[in-house]
Image 1 (cartoon, helix red, strand yellow):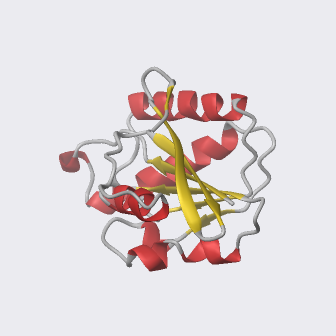
Image 2: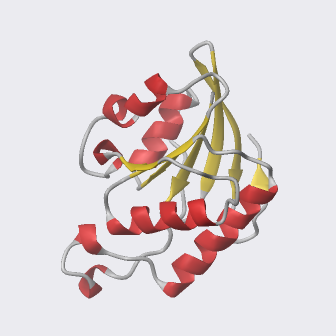
Length: 161
């Protein structure tokens, strides 16, 4: 199985929304996520499913990602444990227990949770830092994860370990 972790796009300032949960993507954030989604689509990645945090900015990011991939037919599901302040790493990764060996599961979430998930899945000693709209791909075979690459949202270049 492969797991694509994506941090949500740039969101409005905390003062612009009633709560952190309701912060939406800025125009620049939408633009960057669209570019990242198109770049990922050109890599011929076929998403089996997309899971997202319930926070508005993550849901919007997941919807843009799905819309930029012409072959994606769903499902796109909210998974509460991908929220930054809800659930453990194990709870956030629970959907992977239902995935097939050839699936590509996408998870859209927040810092610091995304770093913890990448560190856990990739068996890394330190958690990587994700800028907004950053994506990374990990492969998991026989219970062992391996970090494949990280996509820079500004240059759309892949950075390998």
